[in-house]
Length: 390
Image (cartoon, rainbow, N blue to C red; front, side, top):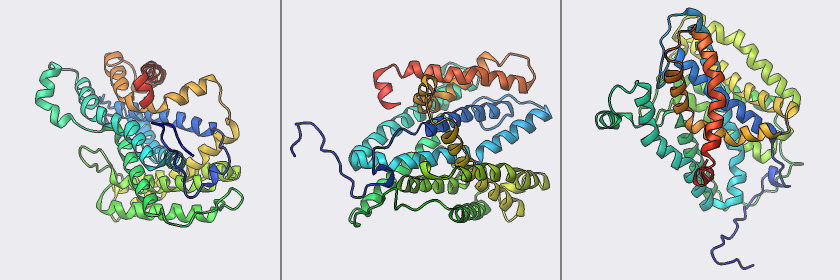
């Protein structure tokens, strides 16, 4: 069959995935999960603001309750929300590759991931650092003096890692291109079992614990802003996402597994997380300490349990989409890209001089920042070129 001049010949995958055996309807429950995770990213970084954590703008507080509650919130979020992002990203990777083919897939990934990463690293990150410092000198002078060390990925480490994962996926598909075509269908694909989930979770905990013997929790690779000890979960859940796409797990996991996942995640917080923290503050971050293994086990249970629980919760309760849900889901990626700039402006320039109890200030910042992020990205995406990328 001939094609028109300039029209790209469609790529035909060697092995159709289970989830592509028929036309796949839009998974509204995944959209809702992604919106929630994006809001948690905003809340997470605002919490770092008010406990003087590793963020662009920090307000130090000596209020014990604020430091305790927001510190626990940061650790709670950290245990699952980025892993769930990688799980969802892995799920949609094979269908995108099969639809576009390797060249168009890579071109799209470098456009949608690589270009925003470059712009943020070399333009937005220095600007946000400058704003977070309170603009003590003119911006031009700041760039001349600190421009080189102000370069960095910031929260776009996720985009950086996802781009690397996608490139490795393309390489894997190329290396296995001569393998005989599979005949997976939804009827013959393997269901997800409790046994497989348990083995994966325990293996994830053990690998994380072993890695943190040498690379403690929180140790970051400079410039790239990557925390290696968190990557066993990110890599593992991305791979699970690939398998979930092949076997249709997002649609087929029984609702009971979601309830068990949420129950295990929340129950493990009482059984493992709190004792590990209270027994010896600091030992949980790594090394040959029982607290480090217990903390790694809790993180694995949270990462798997919360991801499974949230997806099934939204699948059972909110697998439909109104105008508001559609609006929010369209902005999530762009919100992730620009939220740091907006949060710094809100926290420092809108609320910085406001004398208010830190927890109330944190709540007010959330109330302002979340709607503002989505509205700003909506307006930004009105620009044709930006809309194509974000």
